[in-house]
Length: 337
Image (cartoon, helix red, strand yellow):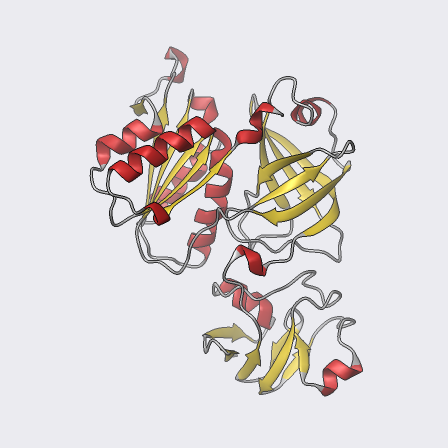
């Protein structure tokens, strides 16, 4: 059976299947309700049932008798038994999400390129990390320093937190990642952080300009857009020195092949004969400049080295992009590794 859920006070509505929780259906439909553990233990998703009936399937330890008397339910384990109306705060900006510090276990390490490592982190069983697509987390080091990395997985796929970490030779943390870090090691993280996230209240076409591992937050944003069937036009310019630098090239090509609203433009600046490269060459910003002269109707998201981000900003504003439609995340931490 399919039921309708109405969120108040926004008036938003969405469909929820009989075997889905109210929270999971909301996230699937693109509505950001607050949550923490997603298993009934933390109470972050607690809200009021205004009308209709639900059944809590699974533990609801965070729901007290006082909560029950007040009509409160836990959206993460509550399944509707018919059409329902709920009262809760919807998350529309980074400030609405709680920043948390948590331990995590290294679940998987995989080299995506000679200098790029996929690191997948598993949080404790009772925890999940809520974030907006494009945000980042800090790895907290023992000496009090921290290193920031974009979250590469989309919010709906939050079982593991995925990072793309580039090796900075001599870097305090990245040397560890590429030499001594092992699966099952414990790290501490803090997040989510940042205002670099997909603005979903706009219908403007989007240009992504990514350099190297600047692809990580773009992966999160595009995977999120695909999951929620966004029909905006998305164009990704991904620049790297050589073919190996486009470490998930096949993923981006598959998106472009399968999604009519996604265009992918890979660009290499120092392609070698061994790359046998037949695509665009130069810088990603140069490719964009050659393709588009008027950016007044676009949104732009640029992520990568500071010099690339600044070049992208200068170019886009000179082509008519409104300043408040340029969003960026410069990887200035790279020098510290």
